[in-house]
Amino acid sequence: MWTNAITPSGSGGAEELRFCASGGGTTTTPSASWPGVQRPASVQVIPECWGFTTNILGAKVNTYDGTNASARQFRWDFDNLGTPVSPMQMSAFATTALPTPVPGTQPSSPSSDGSGIVNGHATDTSSKSYMKGNAYGVGLTGAGAQQTPSAGTTGTVTATSGTTGSVTPGASAWLANWQDLQGWTDYILSGATAQATTAGFWYFCLSLWSGPNLCLGTNIGPVIVNQYNFT
Amino acid sequence: MLITPLSLRPHSYWEVALTSGRVIKELDMVKDDRGKRQIDWTLDLCSTGDLKRVKEIRLICPGILTHGVIKLTESQTAFQFKNSSAVHDGQHQYRILEAQVIGRVTDKVTGQCDCFIWDRTLGLFKYTSNVMKFGAWRQGIAPIGELSLSVLGLSL
Image (tube, rainbow over all chains, first blue to last red; front, top):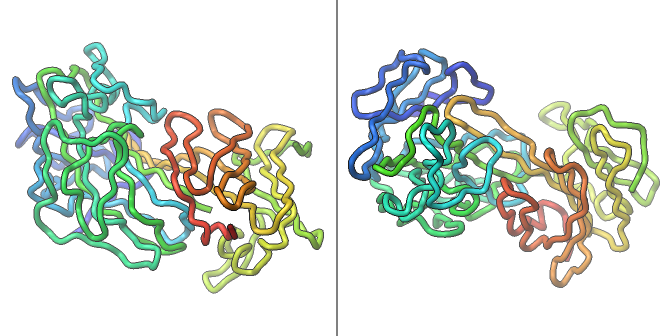
């Protein structure tokens, strides 16, 4: 059941997605006290994701464990007020300035933005982003049909997953191989323009990895972006 | 370019002049079964047939005296759209209106178009692209790809 929505205009620890090691999070940990993740000796997923609607009120994303085991993790929720003119696209960036990634280039430690994750590393990720994503179908079709995934596995994901350029899920299907979210260098493109003035969802999953060559720092989480065009 | 009084609005907006002399602005309000709302390009220009009567499209830009103006030489070749990003940076989530585009298809066979773009970081500038494969004019903008001709009311 979808019980939590992270909405625009959060601040001071509100409206956050937070990742941590297994057992590291609680429903009431303030943002400033969120536990760090130790850099591992070998590449591996960061197994927990939590969503916080206020600084001290959160819920674990139970279907997220960093693997492809469970669908129904996240969804973009759009209202019935807009008229899209093209398919939407999603990816991850270092900052809200949406800079072009530099694949394989790690910033100096300690970093304070998402460039380390987004740029990836040649050894850890074959210079693909440490943040992987998968999306289901087109979301809402041009005829207004909502594509909703069943529970279950969602394609193949590894630390080196990713295809240069855009990838598009088939209708009512996940990508067979997860995409790395690396700016508009590697990203996911929906396969259709959604129907005008119709509310709907576009379902997606995330898998955040870490590795021995990822930079150290605080608040190094990337910016997750959905870009869309409308009248 | 059109020189008008300075627009105090924080964002750009489109304006069209019809062959009848009537001017329709994006800021105009209309009423439908959901109540009062701002005019919409697809719902109100395309569906009413007014798009066929557009002779000029303008992009009124905030804070500057000059605006983008495109005169049409052929019916149903004008279009406009806006580009936005829904951003979640791990701490905050918000929407950013990146740019607004007005354009005219100059080659109905290939889809080539001439545009004016008001971009939140670049300001107003001219841009040439293609409605079948609309490009990205700066970093941070994804290649837009094929625009929906039916939504925009284009007849190629």
